[in-house]
Length: 491
Image (tube, rainbow, N blue to C red):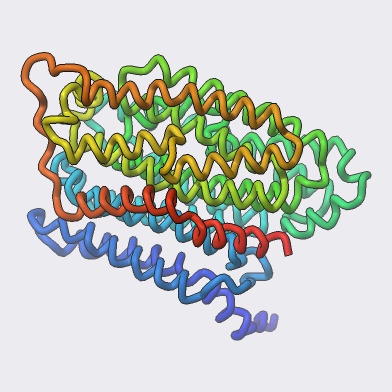
């Protein structure tokens, strides 16, 4: 039996297509080897090695540019959309690693496996963003999820961490099963799992009416909705966010959400458009439910981590407003909002990490009392991030919501935009409640002393704060980049 000939040019093109992912995975493996060879007191250099690998990978994304590079028989494609989300994911990972330099010393997570798992999860997110075959998206989803399950339960001595990891794992396993079964049904109806081929086939109205295909689409949407935390598939989010090490919570809230939305955007804009108007009615309902349940639940929380968890659910609903629009403007607004959300949410979690003293007790809202005047820099940073999350000008959060709701209005979804604005107004109450505690509520007893900020940790806060302000005042470049990314998908 003769060996199968290998097309060297095609192989090199495929490797070039996934160069950023290769660099991240290679860094993860290298970190594990270094961890075996260095003494315990030098473990902090593992974080630096991880950060260097992420920066090099980010540089390679810019080096490849937005040009379309297809690899591995079209299963993975580097294009404008993939490059945009790789920038968001790698930026979120870099900020997380900067914060981890201090957090790991305080909480004892200076372990090689901690950084390696973080990097391997990042590589899975990047594959999700560039996958143009549903099986590639599934493999990326699992590569993303399994390390995150472990990271959520990394504090093995804390019951809340173990509980959050177990709930996340069990529900995540069911969601993966739904996703894979949906892919199987779609393959049974069409004979392909390639997203562009599915989009072409949906021009035939008979496929859109095929019950097997529709069942597959529904199950696929359930799997992605779980990762995005859309209601009613959000139940894992508060417990997983609360139980996870807070630096992992920040990473999950920004990077995991961006990766899941990357896959959802690629599938929705290319494939599900042929299922109008039924699909958009479903997404309309999911958006309203997600915004409303997330915000109403956040109103009742005294634990800051749980409040930000429910807040992240609500923000998934806002992003879905752009996708319901189903056109270029909605896609552009969704991409821009995911970019700014990563900075403002990671920044908010970073300030909260510094203020907290203990993982299980330090995130009560009462611990913020008097912080604003006692520690003005921390108070100013947290106020900036909360104001941006609430959508108050001149921050990036306001610009993002403005474009999301504008896209909905221009496409005739006026009531969806109205409900979005009302939900955003309601969210201002619980965001500003934290500001009130910082500046207007006196501390009861001795005020907790914030953890000493490391230089890298401070750099992460400054970078996040600068991004939130600059993207709010000068959003043009980021909006243009988002526009080109969506165009690369639709062309």
